[in-house]
Image (tube, rainbow, N blue to C red):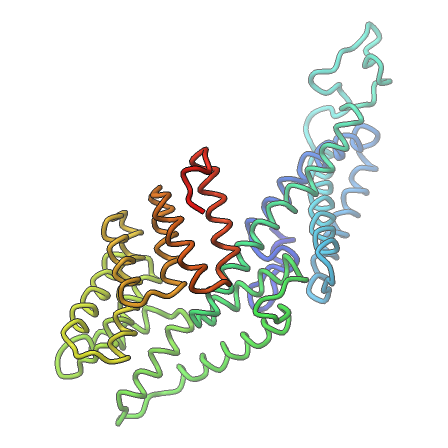
Length: 388
């Protein structure tokens, strides 16, 4: 816990590890080799174990402190640093704890056979485990957290791209900070993570300064809309709803408030309220004359309804919303959303058909479509069920 505290920077980011779950996985993965190493040292001499454990604990504290001024240029270096700190921390903790344990460490470990003289057969009375187990524990201490971190980094990279597209500045900044610590070589939107993190931090500070500024008494709709947009970008959705609700009815009614209400409730994981907002927006705009504003509002409403329906487990409504979206605006993105919906609902042929339509409309979807078709073929045990 002390090392974890020292790893946190002034913004709450966990240096080297990025997230608490990666820190926990690293420590747990290093625990076996740390425990066995501590047992081995204590078998030789408890006084030496205390000195060595204390030195290694101080070394791990020093590593945690210098992590704030250390940046890595490669994934290998970042992975090595995480593993080294975890091994030092667990080894020192195990060594110190065992050195003050109220039992005799020098006694044989469980599972060892002794001869008539009390010596362990074939091991000179010293060995705890076969030599190959050291290699096994060492590989586990490095490979397990590295594999987990790689999986998390892939998920963060995808989430960061989505957050940037949705202009979720605070969330994007947090994801970028975590991803930079996991994989310093990654790039998003053709920008290195250090530059992107700095730009997002500056934009976040600007938005926070804006929302702290008091609103004038003679504020107009444009000012209110700008304040709502800033709060939504900062993911301060409860505050945004305080401005949105008065605009959802009465003389101050503005139709865009319905869409923003659905969006804020979606980000607050309240699908029922989100559905209510998007359905009200859909009904309002369906009565209006055709215009670009109406088209954009209907697209947003159908997407919001489909997302809420998925969270509520209403498959029929989700499919209907995406199908209406495709009929309204048959773009590659919307066909691929419908394909993803059908894939999750195990409707293989329809998923493949819409994935192929997405590629025809925009070749940039080719890789994603091919990945989906391959997965569909594997999941259904036969490529003949998936049209190509």
